[in-house]
Length: 163
Image (cartoon, rainbow, N blue to C red):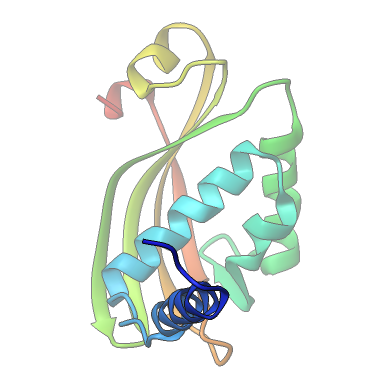
């Protein structure tokens, strides 16, 4: 069976149309827990890549910390944490997200920074310098549709609290 040029063009047009329908089909937005979890994963990945722009995009301009830091002061603290040393590994442990309402969620998470080439939390502890923090805070969906941290407080954790 030989296809004519018109039939081939028809098949290609049909495939392109089907692809466009799938690409532009409305997707259900993730729930509060999933959206905040995805944002935290993006932010920790950005920290590992030392991409401060992406990391700080996850922080609201209205951010306030329990320590009295605003967004700019938080950026200075994170710059020191992320940029010092050669290797930075960032691990998220025990992430808990609680939906407050459809545009706000509370978070409690352990964030572990390590200076290492380790690829798991278990190997990180034995061959690196660790800094670990318990972070409690809130994320809010802002007017542009992005989820951002609006408040947080932290405390240092000892290595024995991690495992």
